[in-house]
Length: 124
Image 1 (cartoon, one colour):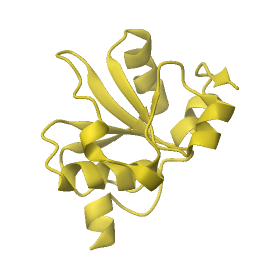
Image 2: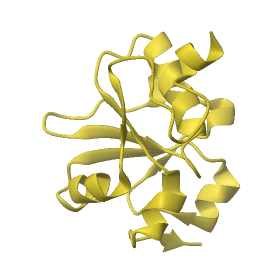
Image 3: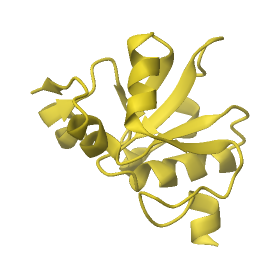
């Protein structure tokens, strides 16, 4: 039940809900560079303060409230990420359970995957 609701148990697990997609960091970087993302970082505040993707919104999983996730405007995609790609699955599960009606994109490998392929970071 937990894996079905929260999208699997690992960074490579495929989500159970067809609205949730696991997307590679290179694709997301292209969206980011084109200004086509609403990026939600579900890591804890101290992790976010240490380093983050420029423009990301920090909504920690420990206090995650689906109603605080902004609805992307037309032409933009919702992207959720964490450190390695696991916690964002839990956040995606909470969003779908709350009735989120749009597509949810989980960044494969999280911020570690983003950094490993040279994605820009803001360091605190």
